[in-house]
Length: 279
Image 1 (cartoon, rainbow, N blue to C red):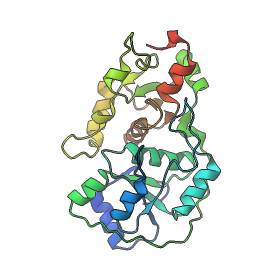
Image 2 (cartoon, rainbow, N blue to C red; image 1 turned 180 degrees about the horizontal axis):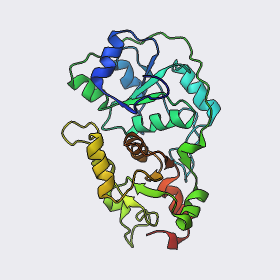
Image 3 (cartoon, one colour; image 1 turned 30 degrees about the horizontal axis):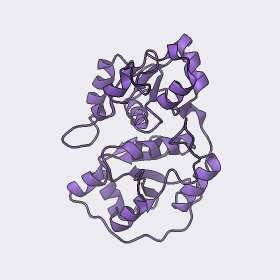
């Protein structure tokens, strides 16, 4: 799997085979994150062999409008190198919570900072263990990586572009928040959505039984049922650029040639847009 055609998603069995064959060009990253505790402690207790932990928020400066902000290129580069990621690596990210909440974000961040050869292990650590594959407590000793971060603006959309899109309608906008937040309520200023955005709730992207992503055909139906034409530009958004990364991931997986994340999400939109620009 070359850097030119890395599948956005790999299976647990694929990764197990690659690890058993001792492929040297794999960088397996546990990107688990919790808002209230240090996920690296859980990583030390159980993880996939050869994996390294990477805190995607290390060195990030959050603000009220960007509560889950992104690092600058230099910070991301330092963090990735500290997790032993090289320019030549095929990066495989996974997490130890439901779905791809943080793995999807990590996938998008590697893309954002110019490392195209990145995939998410579908189903995370729970599926890895459920499929009978081993975990370890051993911490692999690795030398610092040489990844060079180069910001790629194609993967991100800013507020000003979202304002312009109100007129141009160049891109279709998908919102991964739940209906309770998407649908505007007079007594809740945190509810409502970007004008014209369609609601594709994050859980709808997953198989409720396996907890893995739906098949490509099933995902295409999710988008088509929502009125989204995947041959045209798509923007994913949520509250602050977390669950919507999986919208970007799945649209890309389904072949959408032009998909990006509105990182500011509804948190920024409701804070900066005119009240008339909230539906």
